Length: 274
Image (cartoon, rainbow, N blue to C red; front, side, top):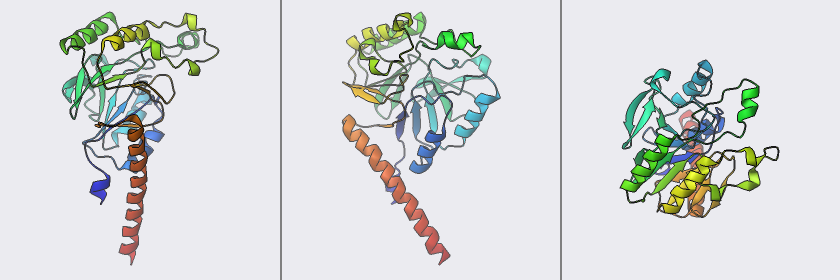
């Protein structure tokens, strides 16, 4: 029964974590995740923000979870590099950055395509930080390469062109401009001062692209519109060929199943005591 309730090779997704992993760890423990599975975090993960032991505390915590964390680049973190101790390896058909001491923490490379059990997924990370000048004024970290460069954009367009502009899933940090969730914009931010060039470029991508699903984070909201799903603290599941509403019901059912498994464990313990 435990095997039925906890199938292997699952692909989970969630939104920004910003270095706070309590809910992720709790979710993984309740689901009794398997080492063959992958957990996608849609940017602003918070593992490469400080560049010192504070990052290592988060990495040490996630390294204890028997699952691979697949991290997309956000706007509140450094891009992995050889200078930071990363090496390029292959994961699910695409290239990723990995530190040898943390083999289950992989960092996606923009423009790469990954095959998650038959689903072709392209990664497009990065965004503009609306808190840029607040951070600079206080000496907080801000990263000049937070948005995709011209080289990254050219790579994305070339890769998609080679596929005749067809892909199953887009995994990005921000969203195409026309889908911006304006209802969650911060009132103290003058939107005319916000650089929306990445969102504008994603508009041109989305208008040409034939895709099934698009998942993004960045806006700290849980919302669905057309084929795009904004994620923050909720969860999604791949692989699937089901509607978004059915996908949510599957997650709820899995959480209920996790409770059943926990109850079974307590029953086993009680039986052993007898």
